[in-house]
Amino acid sequence: MLVYVYKSNKKQQTYLYVLQKDNFDDVPKPLMETFGPPSFVMILALQKRQKLAQVDIHKLTTELNSKGFYLQLPPPNEDLLKAHKQSQLKSKG
Image 1 (cartoon, one colour):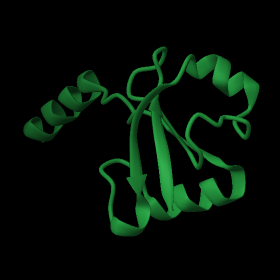
Image 2 (cartoon, one colour):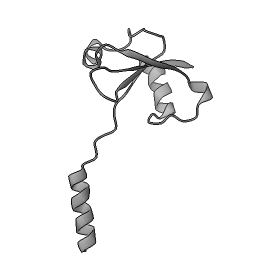
Image 3 (tube, one colour):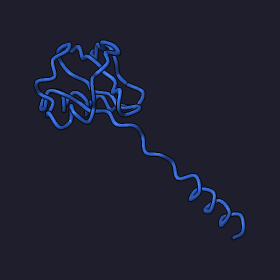
Image 4 (cartoon, helix red, strand yellow):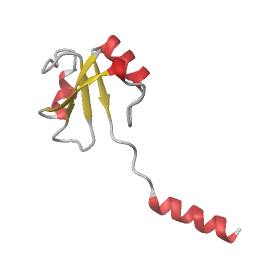
């Protein structure tokens, strides 16, 4: 299976995977408005891959087959203040 990957110009680290190049017919209009004009990044041949860096391939293929697209969102921001406070509590206790 070939997938076409696009990045958002509005949302950092946000990617859209579709089954046909430049075909966003399956993507809901509100999502496309939020995503902004897509910028082509690459073509991926999924059958040659067992892993992707930040995407579960099983989930990717399932959503592509059921919805016709997959939206990759950025990982959640780490709360550094909370992590620091927890490390301080552990060092005192």
